[in-house]
Image (cartoon, rainbow, N blue to C red; front, side, top):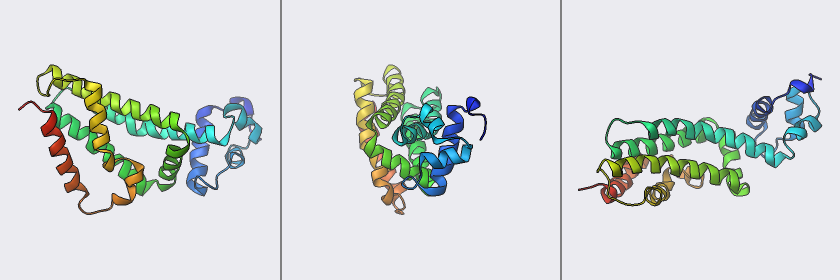
Length: 196
């Protein structure tokens, strides 16, 4: 066994991701993670008290890989507000699609955690809506968007674009009209919030 005193949460999360990719979310266990790290499963439980908590932590870290690049877009200053909002939603959709295709085990776990761990998903959604609100607020101040409450507008936009990023719709993302549908929905939405 390795020295269990040097084991970090990041090491456990790395191992858990590896196990999840190898066995899938339903067949992975804390014992499998412990084996990868050459420690006892009790050591894992000292850091994460249950399999569900460990899965939620892995999912939370994975979700940051989606939200962190979006924060960069939210903070950008150049271009119009409508362009920045469209870019934000486009990147979100592309990242979710890429994960669904290229990292199906993690995407499956994310989908499962969506159903069982509301806190992790709520925090993620709140983070995303906050990023949209940041862009909207700047657009209102610059006179590009109609006056209103940025958080309300951001939440409405997020809900309206859910088809393109919510895991419940993943089975539809392979449709050849997805890009056209995205553009159509976005055109209607932006027309409703932009100053004429």
